[in-house]
Image (cartoon, rainbow over all chains, first blue to last red; front, side, top):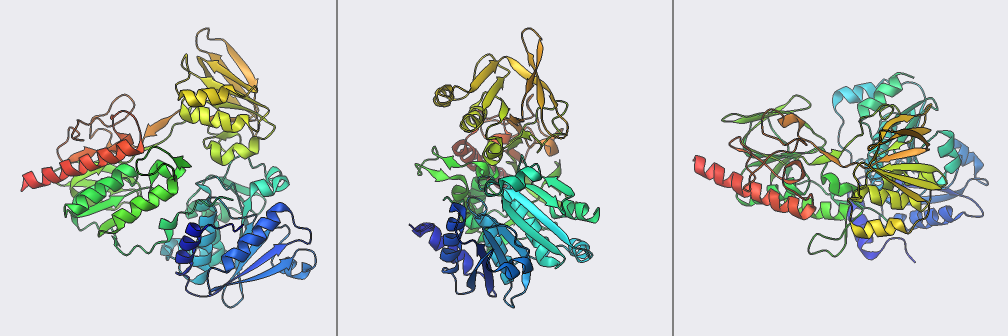
Length: 213
Length: 326
């Protein structure tokens, strides 16, 4: 059975028709797929079929370990978003971007394709000053209406500065990781293992936290 | 798998114009929930120049999973209904800005509205439709442990409480809903309610009664949330005897109702003890040219369908007001 019904398919096509440049998705799964991996596999397959501007490469976490290492993928299912020239956008989705997260996923595709609103110059200036590796993990649940806001903000930073890598992490699919970071409310944004933010915060709050690192 | 797609987010906003400080608008609408969006459709259809500023498009509707009492739809997802409202507003040229909150409202022959980023907008009439937000308990430990066991969104955070012990505060519909969601997965749920009875719908009370891992404490209230980095215990007081007990808990879900977003209008328009804006049946406040509609007002029963009706009424009253000024 398809994941997207007729109505959603039509809406997705319309939204994806606004993509400007091509975007490539690299999907990582594993040999013996977990249920989530199977669903994510189907999700990426169906989605990639909805736009000529989208292409998909499916890799295996174990067999393609060099690629996995290159893209800093250490768990599956994972979706890495690449720009049209094949360079890494810094944007990752771990777990299926279902529920409300479909919105952050589409935002990422549009943004990486070049359809993105400019940021205020003051914010842009602060982002360009980031000169050391920053790893942002945004923990979400698919039923959380506030979570896509936090994900989109983190992904935007990744898109604007190549030192930043930003992951959406679907908490239910990565329970040990959620426990490790003591996630008991979402969205929760963990920055470089050390700093965190609770709730959907504006981009400036995220920058404040990064500047403290 | 479900997809809560907000298609409206991605629609090119061809008819949305930027809000401008130099323009004197006929109508400035504060809030983009059902009341504000309906008001916009009415004022725009009357040909009035309209600006709308809002924190988020859709207001509380965006946090509602399913709506079953908005006529025309037997069932519709909250975001879908927001998209439909938004589309209907978008067919007109409206000055529109989201992610923007209002700081101050100054009445006068021309009303002035100061935004949080300092810009000042001017309008002949103002419709306040800024809605409500979740209320806090305001007890020690709540702020410190927010996001660390203190939760305000059961649909978001319930999954983290599988096989855990939780407390839900509030015996209205949202408290009952949270308790039902949690009872399915948690070891134990304690529902704490200040009043001597549950105030939610009977259908939810019955649903909750079917779980044997739920205890209901009526006429009790939480006094303090304790824990080192995460919620561990909650101090609960019996309101009749004053007796306090400490309950072990991994989490506490706060569902004690809503607070009107009316701070910016304090001292300008009259409000009741809950800070709801007092309006008459024409949606008039006591200040000429300032109207209010929806959940932020004293009008009883906070429902989408009521907010829409009130928004329409406020818009029509504003249109009459402008007409009579000429």
